[in-house]
Image (cartoon, rainbow, N blue to C red; front, side, top):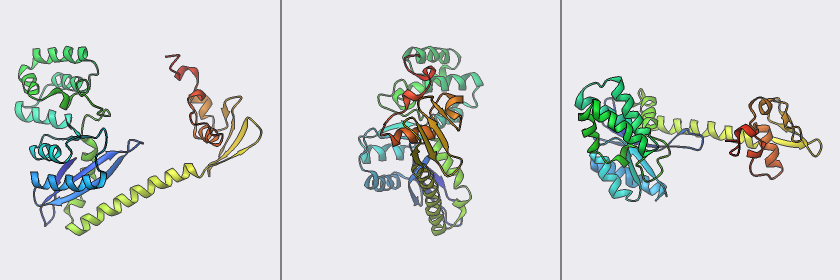
Length: 275
């Protein structure tokens, strides 16, 4: 979640929230326009968001360190995990201590993305040696807020709020519009995205399978299609043979046969046992 300033005749702030869908694509789920960004505006925005999504198990919210956001999340989503955007955090460090050397920045990101406590403590010691002031600054922020290794819940590997910053970038020109055209821009953009993704999903579901014999099947995909032979583990698209991973044609055949998984169709090099 984040806010962005409006640029047109009517000044104000737009607050918005995005999530990532199963294909790791941005999905915009809420936005609101306010005169200024305050605790009251964030509280109202989150209350409306709560009306839409309710209490979601395992919900993690990633934002900057604005006090208004912190208080509002605690009040409206008390069971949600609030985590800090590492990109904003390094920006705060630069603002406080000046531009950092490349080595310091690299150490910071290694600390953010360390998966083992031993790894974290190793890089923490190195940061202490070269920039004790930066390390002292970071020590004042709970580690579970900005690192993976000390986060007690699932952060889904999202250490920044870059997805919502991408929305700000998309809105760069639209933020100059009057309020109603701005809202219409949002509505039209979301309609376009949803329709495009729906068509993509329907395209897969619209594929059909017809049997040739008990091991060979023809898959119709509105293009060149594919002939799949399960015994020989081949598909005429050649993707299966060249990558060792099941292509969409193979997956459709397995679905046709009521087989719920396709992991066994991968070559041994990809299997857990081999690893």
